[in-house]
Image (cartoon, rainbow over all chains, first blue to last red; front, side, top):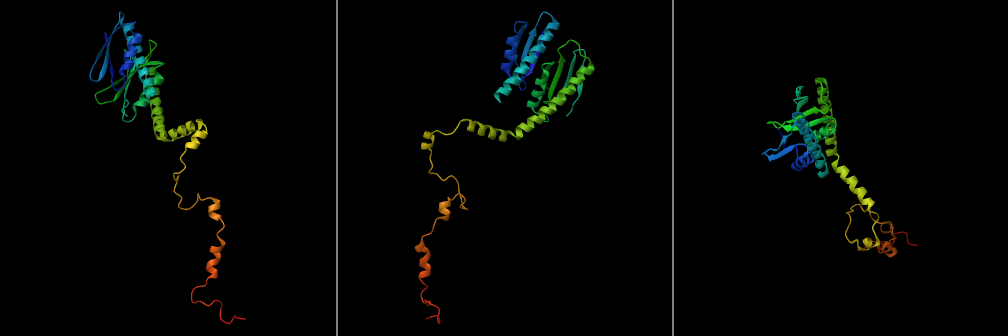
Amino acid sequence: MTRLSFDKSLYQGPCVDEAVKVYGRFATFELTEAPQAWVVAVSAADPAREQKICRELSNYALGLTITQRKAGA
Amino acid sequence: MHHAITTDLSQGTARFTVDPSLYPLDAIYGAAYVFIDRCYVFLEKDAQGQVLVSLSPKAPAADAPTLERWAGEFSNELLSCAWRHQLAAENKTLLEQVTSLALGGAMGPPSLDDLANFDFSGQALEDPLGIAMSWEEKYKKKDKKAEVAPAAAPAAGAPAEPPGEKR
């Protein structure tokens, strides 16, 4: 299991949620909230696949955060 | 900027810190957005509030020079984005004015109803030098009686004609 910690000042919560929805069928996700971060625990059968899903999820969440921020500005 | 670039070949990741007091968050996002199509970008914050950027290749293998080159290109893009951000902030008022003028012009001329309902009674501007005075007001013919009267009525006690000029 890999734990991804998305800093709240850098990533928007709804964007992380959206990214988890998009990649939900490729792995098992568990979302929790820390004081400073959105924490996503990712579990997949294969470690290499798990790492790839984590990286894709991070990229998607970051891209969505940037576009949402631009749209809201 | 403390710009220590570290490459972790076992993870295939280049990591470096960015000082958000020098580079605004918008610039960091702008540079990250340029890179998310060619590598995985992950942002974190450390205890000092510095933004930690991680770049990982999408293809399985990337050697150390490639990772370092990405970090360098990211830094250049970061500087470019920060400069554009500063220019946008400086020209924000001008852009808003031009945009509002363009939108106002696109609305077209006022309708007759708009003109009929327009309040012309208010003084539009102060005009202490009389620049806005109409031509007729400024150069209108003065009343002849008013011009002649002061000359025709000599001052009290003054002779009507100079002495010695009587015929």
